[in-house]
Every structure is written in structure tokens, then in C-alpha cells.
Image (cartoon, rainbow, N blue to C red; front, side, top):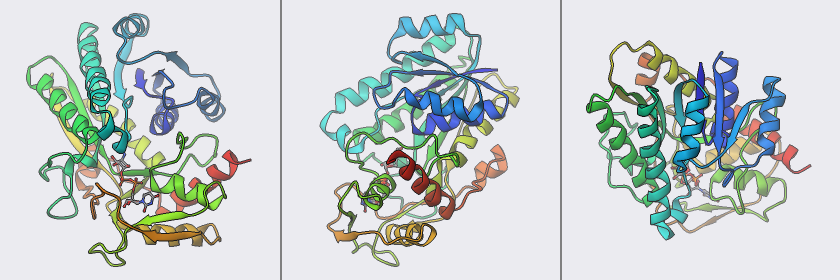
Length: 337
Ligand code: WQD
């Protein structure tokens, strides 16, 4: 079964392409390489032992998309391609709404034209904002997004749901990611942040390898055990496997119309300091970090309840925080060679 993977050369996309192939699917990548590098395709090839079909195109380019749908007999689509920098989205909201909403609407339109019914959407725990109670379940009310980026995820979920409700013959799942970290154990694919990383783990590994002078922990005065924020850090390979499970679930659904959402996290909340200490322990090194002021827009704590993903999708995270941080370090060391 051919599956179109938009943004398939990205961090989560590339790991999902590997898992799709290793589960018997035939992944077809579309990527405009605006936030990824073509060398990722070589990394994927070295893992799966064959080259993967990749179209260098933008998901807002209707003609390019129609040509791909015309040529490839697709059984489904996994939609990763999106702008995803929270801070940038505040500065450039129109770019975010045009890219993230526009590509989703166009993909759904063209899927309908070609009778492609299975759609997995890359959503985010950002839709929960700062939840009133923890852990968050899929029934936890979504809150006003703290950024245009988070708002695009929330709006896209509603667009997809409304298309399903319209009896368009769409079967769709939105996966709400928590904090993806780590890299493939082979260390030939991983996170490739552009410029100064805004996310914790890539900045941390760059500090550990000497690319950054030190890591700043944004705030230690939160109402948490050690004062630093709590997040649900999930290994990117576990996250990738959740997409395979989602596709398999959709393939088995015999109703014409289906929509559901799933939390994809570990179910464990970890503080920033706990992550740092775990990184130092598993990699036997001392990290140069300092405590700084809070980062505007950060929520204090969020982590997932993942019972539904296990019961309905048959998926559960298998890798530990130690695995993620060991793999993240191995990847950084290879990058820095
Ligand atoms: C995690 C924690 C920071 C950097 C974002 C997106 C979310 C998802 C994952 C896409 C926070 C602290 C960070 C640093 C630090 N992306 N931190 N020093 O903000 O939880 O989530 O990425 O779906 O949608 O919002 O991730 O890694 O930026 O921050 O102390 O140099 O690490 O304050 O508490 P975040 P993050």
C-alpha cells in the first residue's frame, strides 16, 4: 500500500518513512526541503536498503499534488508538512495560516478527487494549552492556543472533523504529539534543527558537544518538584510507530466516515532538570547549564494519559527517556564529526 508522507524528509517524517517501510507499506515522500535536507533520503536508504520515492514539491502546489496522485495509486496520506516554530508563528501568523491550513485543505480536496480515504494528521499537545488537570486525556478540553502555530493545529483538527462529518467518505486520525526527542538507533537520521535550536534536547546536545557555550534552563520557579517545567518526552521512533498503527486502524475501519484523536506520549511527566540529569548519567558527562528566566509562552506542565492509544490503536511507547537521550547524543556526535 502506497502512503504519501508529506514532510517525509523531516525529523518525525523520516523516522515514520522507515517504520512504514519496515511494516510493509510503500512510503512516497513529498517535501519542499524548506526545513529539511536532501541528505536525509540517503540516511533513510541506508536503513531500509533501498531508495525511497521522493517528490521535491510544496503541499500548497495543487498541480504538483495532482500529478503525484495521478501517478501513484495512494492508499492514504500522512500529513507532517507544516511550519512549526512557535516563536516564528507569532511574528509571521499569515505565513503559518496560509501554509498549515492551506496545505491541509488542498490535500483533503485532492484526496477526495482521487478517492483516497485514509488520512493521518500530525497534531500537537499544544491544543491543550495549560490543562486544568493532568494527565491530559483526549477528552480534555482544548484551550485557546498560545500561538498561531498551536491555533493552526487546532483549526486543522476541526477542518478534518468537519470533512468527515460531511460524509465525504474520509477516515481520519489526528495524533497529538507531546515532545518528540531522540534519533534512530543507527544514528543515520535524527533531528536537524536549522540555526539555533529552540527545542530543549537539540540545544542540550549541541551544548554537550561544544557547539553552544551552555544550556539555559528557562525558569526554576514553577510549581513543580524541582521548579522546572514538566513535559512528556517521547522517543521519535515510538512516535513514528504510532503512525503505522494509526494507518492500520484506519485500514480496518469499515465505516465510510471515521474521525478520532489520540495522545501520543509516554504518559510520564519529566522535569527539565530531571532530563538534564538523565542525559548526564546515561552519557557519562557533565553538561554546562545555567538557570535563567522563564521563556514567555511556556506552559508549566503537561503530560499525557495514553490509555486510549493503547486500547484502541494498540500502540504504547516502548523506549525509555534513557534510550531517547542516548540516541540523541549518538546522533549529535555523528553530526559533529
Ligand atoms: C521544552 C521545555 C522549555 C529550550 C514545543 C512546541 C510543541 C512541540 C514540541 C511541535 C520547556 C525548556 C527549552 C532551552 C529550556 N512541537 N527549555 N531551555 O515548548 O514544550 O514544545 O516543541 O509539535 O508544539 O510548542 O518544547 O523543547 O522548546 O521546551 O529550558 O534552551 O524545555 O522552557 O519547559 P515545548 P521545547
